[in-house]
Length: 57
Image 1 (spheres, rainbow, N blue to C red):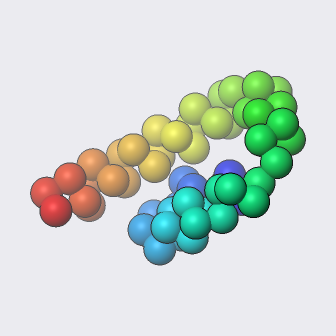
Image 2: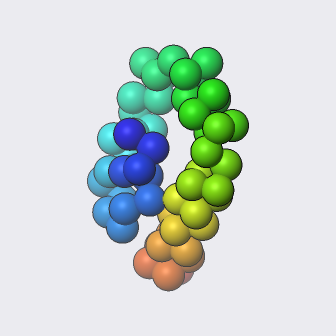
């Protein structure tokens, strides 16, 4: 699911956000700690996309 947050479709982010409470924070926390470069790249893509497409809204 983390990979989907870096995609350029706002509806994907909305769906992920809706389902966050159902995710295992231990599992995802471990994945992020073990894959920091991947997480940082995905996070940068998400921020860049939002900045280009939604900042003005």
